[in-house]
Image (cartoon, rainbow, N blue to C red; front, side, top):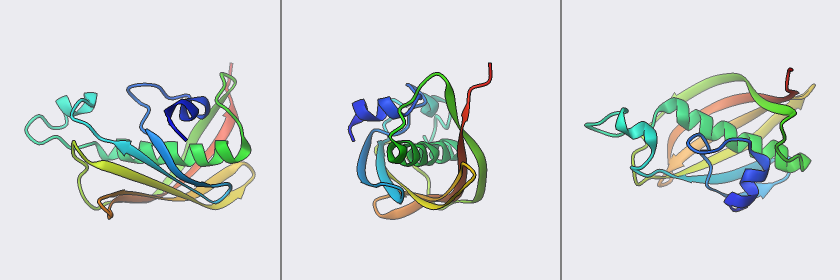
Length: 146
């Protein structure tokens, strides 16, 4: 999937869209994506000016967007204004190495289970084949409240 197709499934837009391309997709099972991390990212001006590091919370958000793509692409449900993809939980989050400008972040999400509309994923972010972060994520799609 290129960025044009990603934009059909994810409601996120710059500066919060954190997936640039999908590299592999196995419906209902797994999805691998990438994020090219550049010095032009708006968060680097403040995190940290003397040593730019991608905030861990944004690495987790990139993994959540990868998981969302897996779920929505599997169901062939494009983004619309009537539903929202929510975090339900983040367990066992671990950060193993910093993500810096120039890194190519490889994002992997694998379905662990789905029950009553709540999906649980094993998620991992890697740089140069080394784990940068990993977590178990739980997410759901719900109608937007009016």
